[in-house]
Length: 161
Image (cartoon, rainbow, N blue to C red; front, side, top):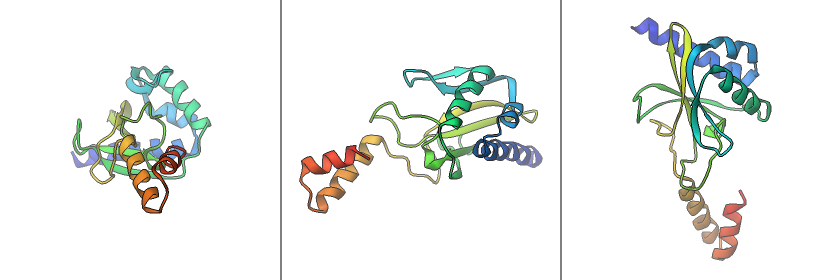
């Protein structure tokens, strides 16, 4: 069992590191042809797709960003204890749809027979605080007001970040 966990974590780490390097061929080879992968559609809704659709979506995302930071955490909700990857503090690859969503997203990855068979967005982490977007904005407004700004200025500044 311990060997399986080590192999799974090694594949997850390969996925993360090769995402940072933008090694599209290796990323493609890590994914199972029969896997299920979550992405966002054009309306920023989460949908589950097969490998070809995921590769197209993920590669487009990688081409438009630089991954500067990779953090590993653990899921505390649907698959408690599973490893979660957070790219750039949880700001990649998923875009936030509205202020009622969590401010950070991780990728939870399942591996079977040394292939990634499932990638799911994760929002509840053991170590990383993940407030809702409206909570983050509210905190920034309060901070600006403590600095002496009016509510209107603080509101404007908080929404411009």
